[in-house]
Image (cartoon, rainbow over all chains, first blue to last red; front, side, top):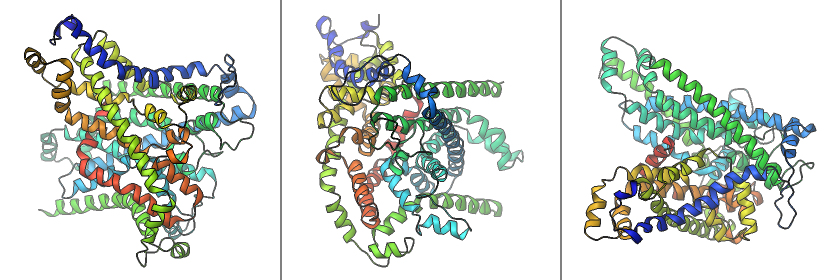
Length: 312
Length: 272
């Protein structure tokens, strides 16, 4: 029934759209969708990253090793917990920070476009530039952040210090880099709220905070939900900045960078992990995928419930 | 303007300027460092540059093999984005118009990619077995797909009036000519966003070249910069100049085409 709408001749010429669609579709299946699905299959093998080595089916051994076998499994659980901690901190702070920036920029102010441009800029700069820029900004021997911390009576050992401190800096740099996207989505949501509502609230004598709580925030629900989901999914999978700034580092790794180190890790500093264990890495990939799925669906469920409550 | 709104505006500006300092601060540090002499930096990294040591830029250009890396980055971004844009329109148009059977199913196929496990390990095996590891062809091949862009295009096509198709067909225009000469120009706003985001993504990517392009003469600028950082990790004055040389084209691009970049990010966030 649908193809009756096709007006460009009949019979043979009907095939033309299929033929022209084919290259893009095949590329997509071949380079993206196929490999995504194949990750699951690889996770049941002992594939390595070297050509010519035999590949064996090992069943659930990779999963069993990752989750339960010895000291490495303990490390893996620690890495998983750290990933959740990273995602939680990034999601909460980035969403709040983005909402604050968007609310400030939604006022009638001269120069607000310039501010918007500045806040959004890092989104297009990429991990390499941002990573190097912040490494310099946090220079431990008299860099600006160190000087400022000295003034406040504390100090920072960002580069040489304990991983736990570098962790919080990387959380912050991740937020700094991506807040622009959150802000832009909130700004889009704020602009759909009719101005009359705010006027009416002001005439009723409501202050700025009361107006925000009673009118703006509830009406922002759709963009809040979009941002929460994007930030949860994005931060659970994030690792590029960590790779540029510190590389795989014990005590600092999250699942994303750990998968990279297992599968491609010429620089893995754990001698018990043979380099380029791609089957094992694939199993870790599947586990990360399941984690994203579970956390994402839970968040979605909670968000939907809140939405229903707000709509009465 | 009355007193309360005046003080309110001052408060707003103070908050905005505070955030702006957080955002501009690291950039100023890079600019400042790139203008210093090496000893000046070692003595006090935070002091203002006393002169203009522009030789840092010349050093970065030469020592960091900038011309080679820039040429590679440009080549990858232009070729991959051009092929991607054309194939993506030929995928998006008939799916949105329902000119192919199974259009709903095809649409789902592209949406599903956003939720599947990471593909890098099987991709690597694929490239290895095709003998495309460490080749330009292999690297470009990996950059020819992006589901979000296709979804943005599919959504945009539905805003184009269907009467156009019928009128063109009535005049004897073929499907291929119609897409090339009518659809492409009409899709300019969405295509601009998709093309910009795709090429910026390739330009900024560090992980893919790290995995696939170990040969120096094939490296794009992101990878090259990190190699330089590995070799001259303490030479922050030259390194800052190199970072700035990489950053300036992106900032120029962003300032001139901001509208489409932001539109693309917004459309991409809606996800179908």
